[in-house]
Each structure stands twice: as structure tokens, then as C-alpha cells.
Length: 66
Image (cartoon, rainbow, N blue to C red):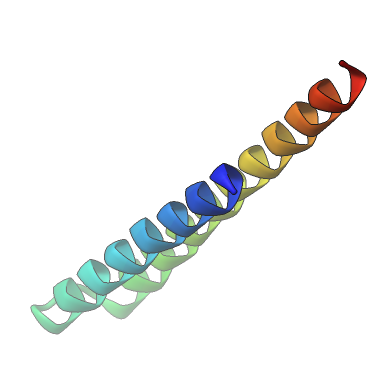
């Protein structure tokens, strides 16, 4: 449950960051820089979702060995 909440939080932060990039693009940010920013945000999101999954698997394993 905590892992799912963490992933929801990560996705929410991603959504906010991409919305901010789109707003900046409307204000004059170049399309190439915006696309690069979105790609970087997605990469960081994927990294942290993976870390949350890994931590949850380790915690499940720890709980099951007790």
C-alpha cells in the first residue's frame, strides 16, 4: 500500500513538471528544449518508480522471512 502511494506521488510530480514545461513552451520555450525536458522528467520518474518497486520487493522478502 505504501509503495503504491509512493508511485502515485511520483506520477503526480511528473504530471506537474510536464504541465509546467508545457506552460513554459507556450511562453516561448523552444519545442526541442521542451521535448528534452519531458524526456528527462520521464527518465527520472521511471528511475524512482523502479526504486520504489525494488524497495517494496526487498521489504516483502524481509517480512516473509520473519
